[in-house]
Image (cartoon, rainbow, N blue to C red):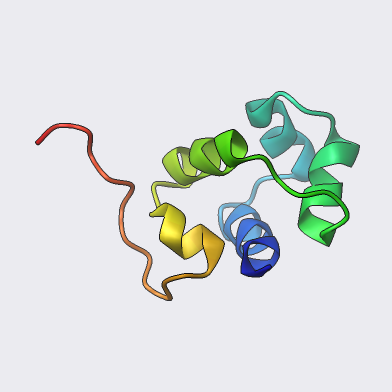
Length: 76
């Protein structure tokens, strides 16, 4: 579950509180904390929101890639 470390790192690197990120995801701070501690699995739609918010590829958040690529642009 590499995403646990990644979502915490991204939040801390960008100086956001758990409460601020929880608000973005429309969940309570306790629920978001449970995502970071691995007590609750984070829903896919929330991972997508975080990837867009932090402008990183979902593969990075999920631990598939070690490279921080930008979130894919929908325009081709």
